[in-house]
Image 1: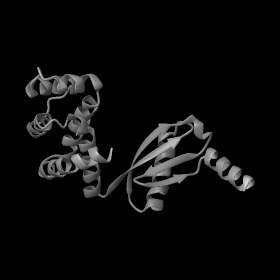
Image 2: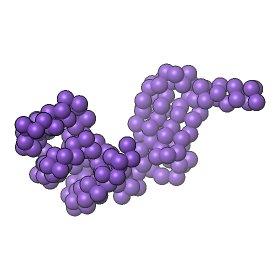
Image 3: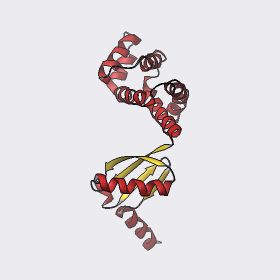
Image 4: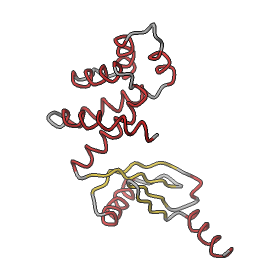
Length: 177
């Protein structure tokens, strides 16, 4: 995957430079939709077919994204297809998202919980996490019943694990040492 990240970086940086002079949020939404489409294996097989030209691939991607793509996004997707980098498009979009978050001072917080979190509880958790991590966070909640209880939070490369499962693992290590 490091190779995809290396390929994606210059595309993401150029994309962010162009989008920063326009509506970054609108670009991000459209790029996310295109990224989801680009992850499809059948589409990649179609794009790799030598009988298919780049414009045909673009038309399929644009139609499958179910959005009227902005001209800049259209140009970007066409360029990615023309350079044979469709497989790297999701990595490009992720790096674009990271650049946009960094520019706005926000970080993604992936919160894994054993049980659903009510909106009021989530707001309290986010406030606590923002104090703990020292930056504004955008929360993404996912259910993970294997945690038994508590939450596990991932912000960039930092992890805060207060789950029952993690506590049990720590007790197991302490008892077997």
